[in-house]
Length: 152
Image 1 (cartoon, rainbow, N blue to C red):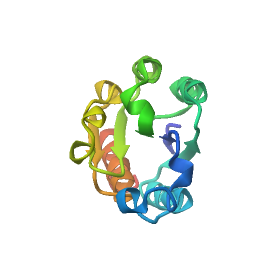
Image 2: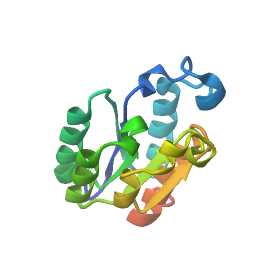
Image 3: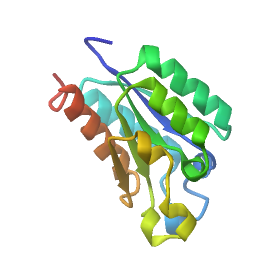
């Protein structure tokens, strides 16, 4: 990990449906498109990307626990769990890693219940409303935090 930091990119429920689920909100890019962008962008910054998606809260919590020992940071789009999961918040806090929260849509232009995210309490920052580019910005934020801005 010292030479090539590993970043966990964690995607929550329903993100496996990207490209087909409400494209007017989430866009037409698939999760595979997002993964490709993340892997390419991470590699350009000298970082290894561990890209995962689950519809199961407990599995996401387990992956965050694993990241404690194997990763230098976490990018998380917890989907609906952002608004409901204290368990995921607790896992992110326990990981003691830099976390960037990402959402494809602008949460603050949507239903009021989406305006609160438990995940934000564990994150160094929140990026929302930029579609898949938000993941690129999140990788850049972690790269800056880890001193990897230019792939060093």
